[in-house]
Image 1 (cartoon, rainbow, N blue to C red):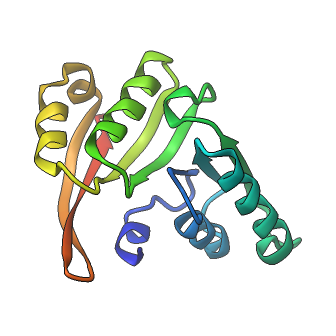
Image 2 (cartoon, rainbow, N blue to C red):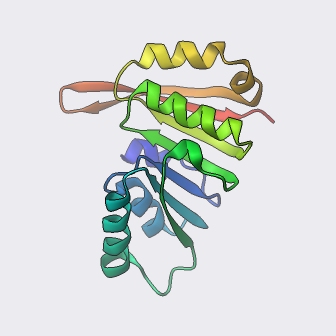
Length: 162
């Protein structure tokens, strides 16, 4: 989680897709480095539980950043997506589905994508390399690895082409 956090862009919003427990978004919130933190998960009770936990345990009156909770599929977000978007802990197909949906809705204005597929890393890389619309708007900035127990996962960082 610390490695992913280190790739967030201070001063820009953070979008934590498929957030489950919201650890990354909560870490971003408590750092006070990001003006907005968005938690996105398609499972309504996950978002409801996360929002309740946030309100009772994490929200600080002295913090000025805004927090948003989205109980919907990531590909259906219809608000402009700015800053850093994290899509981690899900498969390559889900990551591609979210990215394609965001592009189709023309809400994509992220500065950076942090992608950490749970499986099929090579498939994801091949699909992104062959996707012309993605390639014209984003370039690979870094590839690194995360170790989770005995498992190694690839972390792909894409930055907006200026």
